Amino acid sequence: MTSTVASTVTGAGGTVYAEISDGVADVRLNRPEKLNALNAAMFGDLLEVGLAVRSRPEVRAVVLSGEGRGFCAGLDFSVFSAMVDRADWRDPDLERGELLDPGDQLVELSRGQRAACVWGTVAAPVIAAVHGPAFGGGLQVALNADIRIVAPEATLSVAEVRWGLVPDMAGTQLLPRLVGMDRAMELTLTGQVITGEEAARIGLATRVADDPRTAALELAREIAGRNPDAVRAAKSLLDSAWHVAFGDGLAAERRAMSRIATSPNQREAVRARLEKRAPVFTDSPIPPFERS
Image: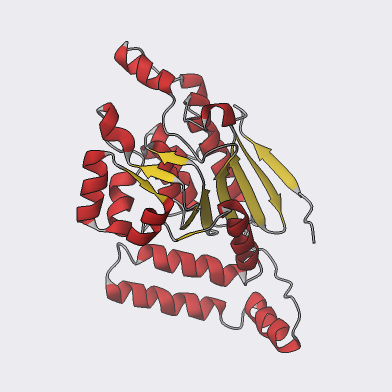
């Protein structure tokens, strides 16, 4: 059955948009003529669209992908040229910092970190669908997703060192969690390019698919059909496992179970399963994001 787009969100710069339907936000990077390379407008649009998606209680899963021949080729060449000329490549009119509430923990981050890390603050699971190149900042955007489905022939690189830079969009923090510290060191210090097949083998990608966007949308729709309260709680618990003590994690599990068990959506999940029908869940307001 073909779904109908319920709403569309487009960044002010026009370089990122999201179509939201049936609980899934289909987010597209939209500079295909530049392989979706990151410029000032796209940094702002990633944050703007990410905040909009984050605020929508009807969003139960997110797919993040690129239009055209690739996911994201990293920084636009014009940025590097400006660096050589010692020009300020940042456009203050496109920072979009005014979109953030003063208490939002994204406020303290740089523009690039906000553009990537906002996707890690979405309560619903985020799935990156990667085809073609995912280099530098583009790869770091994908690292902030919860799941990465990549084409076998996709090319991925922590490319910053080749331009005399360091990863600064959470790459140094997220990459070792996925591939281990030694492999993260090798990838970061050499800028080597690996395929989607190799990325899946070392844990950088969740799995490969010939059509990653289609596979990601199928997975997103499956997740969107589950109890959204349980999905969001499970994501939060798994995220916190990186940085909370084991006992604190167990306590968080107990609190989550106490809150969810016998709640309206959980009872609906049981009834629907017993009656062998599709569940009808109610979306709750999204609480303000707080990182532990």
